[in-house]
Image 1 (cartoon, rainbow, N blue to C red):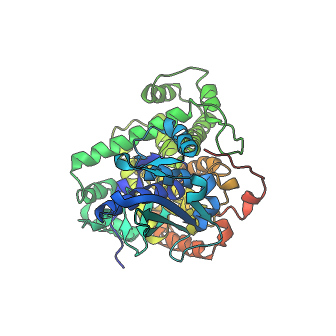
Image 2: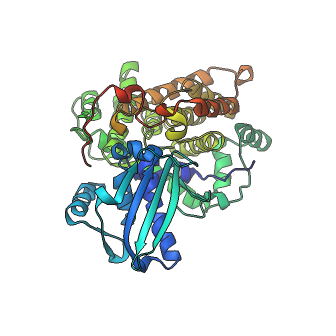
Image 3: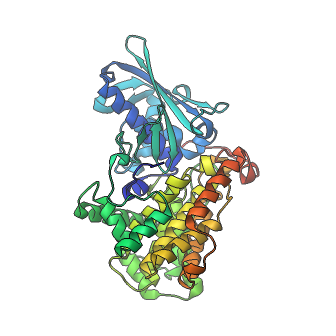
Length: 481
């Protein structure tokens, strides 16, 4: 079976927290619904819209901000560029006025409590993350469409037609790649036969979508966004929203590690960390600090890079910043790192899933750790075989990890899990670089297959439903965003 072609910019995209499947996907689905209404000439006649959430979206949608996402999506705000600081005021205005403004200034009555329905007792057949938009037209008729948020910000429609993570109906799948890759063995074959590294293969494949110059510009944009998110998280204190009363920790860690020094921008901050250096304990603290910073931003509806999901958004920046701050300088490293990580993420999407609602947290933290391990191995001079081995090692030690967020919030245990995933990625890289892959007993393809089989066997209550595990241990009173 030949699966869709996936661009590195479908794996990495700039958006808003806290969840790629529960926030980004529904947000893009709302935009897609409006676009389809326009295409069919229905938009002028829309009088009201209600939204029905099913399965995991219904059970943990409050904590994940699914209701927030669909409202902002119906307003056609762009998660990559909207002012995240204005989100609370925007929501307050909708709730107080009972009015939601669609694109082109079209105002319609909207009551979030009545028009967003959490159908907790029903799961749609195709995927646990289902949602339906129903527009009531001016003549009293209704027009409805069902979508599924399948992980990592990707959405598909009720007929199974796909969309890239950017929400475009055409998606990335229409591209024909010069070096198609379905499995890890395909990637290895291309590298061996053509004498190419992983990022060189990916660069050639990305030309199916855009010019090489645009690819490099896009990679630089992702790297800048990763740095900005970590920097902001390391300089913001307070308590995270949602009702758990979780205190931010990254800012205090950053202040302690830099002896109270303050730096005005991400670049000077990184250079200061590099110049200060540190022993093993300090480096380990920095890796954890980077990961916590990003996921505290994610939990606070901040701007993050989905990598490959929002719940696991801290692992890749933590490992990449570890390289930038504590490894030999390499100007090409960020781009090569992201290209390698993106390709490995697409292998997991094709062979298993990026959705915690389908596979538990092994599909989020496990995948991001494997991506990071492979990418770090690449930029530290490892072979493609060693990168494959590093990804295999990282995922092997995440198999079976459940998704049991307390209160449906991407906070406990999600934030700390990013730090653990980053440390595991670095360890997996070190093991791979010190090993001869010819002696490896388990292939990456075998681990991906095992991950998918484990996902299918996992009890539903451990798949982002907050019906098992840690989610049952702490009482929560959810607060509005």
